[in-house]
Length: 342
Image (cartoon, rainbow, N blue to C red; front, side, top):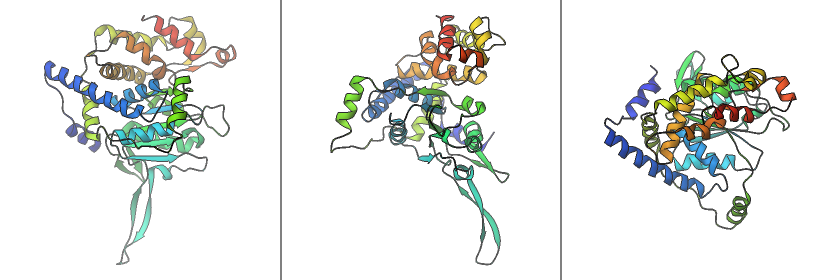
């Protein structure tokens, strides 16, 4: 067990009986409603994106935001850091960014007595909320520098392990791959993101609100609603939300049906190159719990699976070359999978 894990266990407590659990879930629902309201004062026309982001944080995961520039992705991450009271850092990914620019490095120092030794200087990854801005503009080598941090919540430099603060979340923004100067993320790193949230253009009312509230003389700052300890307790509480057997079986059926090796759907067998692994099952189990809490319910339902299937599965599946040539989309295949558990 790592030191980070021990620290996390000390920082959180479990709820022992059902009455306490109900009260705790009810209170968390009110807290998250206040958080959502606080974020909504600065992010307009993106209610779905805000909800899926909050689900990811409550589940203790990392988030990949994909959208063209100018849709408020960076502003969303900055607002989250303030509202949750987290120590946040931002790294602008560029083609010349090196792994040491993220993780840190050892430097040779000489003391006043003439003794030489190495000292580790921490990089920006040593924070609670890391914004990896335009992550796919860096080389695959630099992108992979986050793999260990995202999975183990620690990094190894020069053979030494260094624990990251808790909680630790990576919220990465990505430009669509069709834009100039982008590199696709490795599949292993994509799988470590809890969700891939596609940020679309706001609707008419949302864009009207943007031009009215962001071009005036008053630009208020977001205020803190929760702190890191409260977020840790909330993540612990989410894991205690009961999941019915029917919901658990539906999650298993959905994920396993998306793998060509175990699928009985022709679309999956013929068009999917590789399907979602066990991390997708884990993500759905945590995601439906978190969504139920956010909506003020004591247990998740099949509707929660339908709502989260696309953002949790879309980056964990890949189409064959022939399927892409025929115009087949992952969204259509995921819809077919969802029909099985309707």
